[in-house]
Length: 474
Image 1: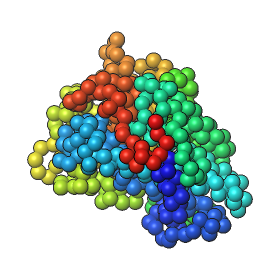
Image 2 (image 1 turned 30 degrees about the horizontal axis):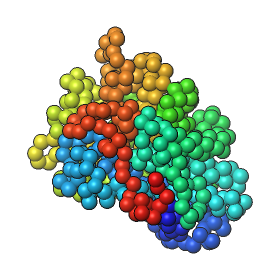
Image 3 (image 1 turned 180 degrees about the vertical axis):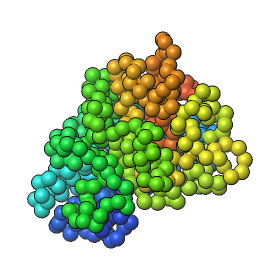
Image 4 (image 1 turned 90 degrees about the vertical axis):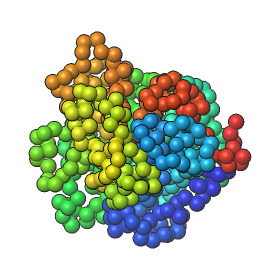
């Protein structure tokens, strides 16, 4: 795949950044690869640069979460005029095609950075302490797997549709040579191989992991300067990184996609039973620092892995959820009522806290990203949904519902578990980019609010034309 090779050759040299500490992700300088990996700080900065890439608006900081991926899931009632082709699954329209092509290129660009980093760990990693080396290597492997998984979920048939069909190339080294597509099943094997290695590397050293008795994160302003002395604070804020439990949670997601219910359940329960994450409650909210918003509280307690984005309001939320925004997306009252039902509109804490009215006209904006600095990659709630689906035990679903406001309104006897899980995905992952993948994994022929019957043409994004022309696709 010639084009992917170009991304890999250009990626790290253009995008590695020096930082005072890992939370200060504004570019400070661009450095050569040979200079970058002469010190521990260079490896830390290179890994930080990958998270910076993923947090951009054309990636998980926008189109892969609140933007395109929720447009194709029919979350919004209104989307920008030139992107209406997204909701009708006309992927060949110029504006739509450009966004989809960018999903491809930004993901492989970030993968290129992972591979450069992994190569340099092998060649120059002895400049790091053993623990730091294992942490950087584990996170890089986990990110490589995470990025490939979302490429697979977007640009290939689902496992249920065609596990033996050709899918995407799995890039595991720095190369400019064409890399052939692997099958859906084989890509999943590669993903799980990387995640398994990452898990082993992170397990004994990650502060949030099982080797440590407890873990907590303070609000940004509550850390003292001395807390940043060790590795520029690199070991802090583990839930804003691909930490040990983020790896395990990702494995649960992948195993479920592969229809390996036993391992999906085991992985989900490892996260649930870890005690590192908890659903927010009235007691937790009352104990939060003054001024903490609902979404900031959710992020602190329920996000397993997330991306830190310092300009989340101006650079992300305002791009999608503001009058005359570049990608103005709204949800009208009718759609919101159908998502939450008449009962949930006034009962569900998500319905009451995740939306705000437009300045003019009807409908509401999602306000999930108006405060705070984190965009979720994997959350505690998903582990309960995976556990419910993998085990067939509705109690996991009821636990989630009770923590979202339905404690005194359990599901009726004989409720259809799969249907209720789908209902929760629609409510829980608004503007997070997960709902479309749920529909696709289930291979649903009909999804709410879609005007077309869903099939391969609607579920599988087209590979960029230049990949078809210069690559190794069949």
